[in-house]
Image 1 (cartoon, rainbow, N blue to C red):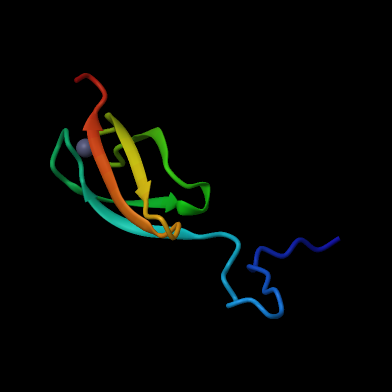
Image 2: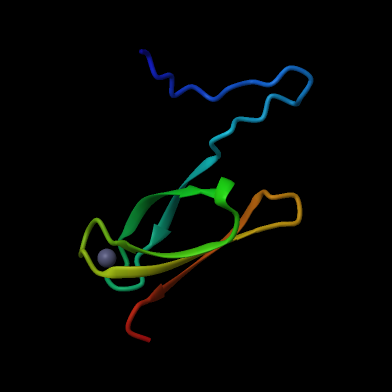
Length: 81
Ligand SMILES: [Zn+2]
């Protein structure tokens, strides 16, 4: 059995990919280094912890989407505030 990871297209639609991820460069609130993160906006607004790839500190991420479901903003906070 072959599992395809390619997004499926639905005829008649706008060809929107099922999996919608945004690659973002953000500044770590601890060490200030720019790190690349991958946000899955298909899940809508969410809050989660992601460790900084430079200093390994836990960063509290909060993603926001607009009314059309498009990624609009991400908040980064230190987990110790
Ligand atoms: Zn850091």
